[in-house]
Length: 48
Image (cartoon, one colour):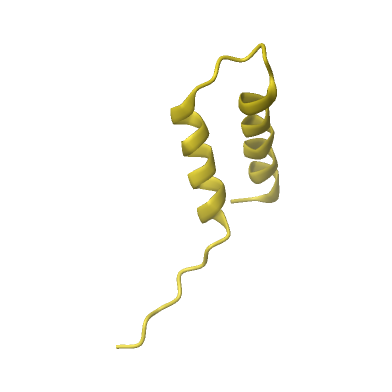
């Protein structure tokens, strides 16, 4: 995920959680959190 994509997702998450004019969408909040949390992970091969 590019830095621009990450920033857009964080802004959307912030808006969902903090903007009183935006209806809360728990499914979208959890989806964004999952995408953000897995974006920095790199697959490490396991020893056989």
